[in-house]
Image 1: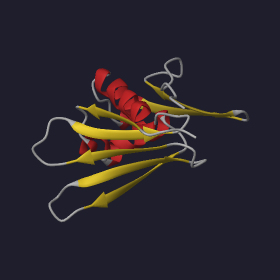
Image 2: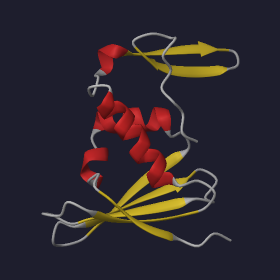
Image 3: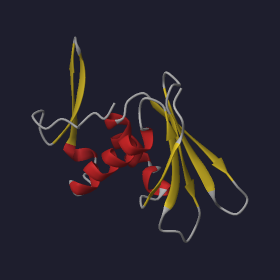
Image 4: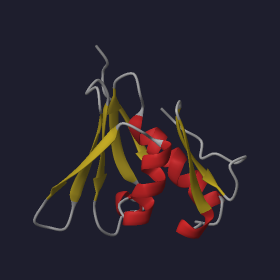
Length: 124
């Protein structure tokens, strides 16, 4: 049994929820599913679950904040993985679709940036 660990993050949950951000994060953090629990005041909780349901994370968003509360539990620290994937993308200048590629072999697939020699780091 894993107890939930509490931390904070400067990465706003809405910054992870755009269509392209979800593409990049999904490539780097496979087997993770998202759900938002919305509240009347515009705040929400972003929930992350691993495919095997053994790991979960939540990030609470409130307007006008610069620090957000995070809870996570399980063998994977899902929010840490999401944040690392987002930071990798941000550190590379937030590249768009035209810079990503996909290589598929009988053994699996690899998403890459600019060249097959530069795979997107998988965080799982």
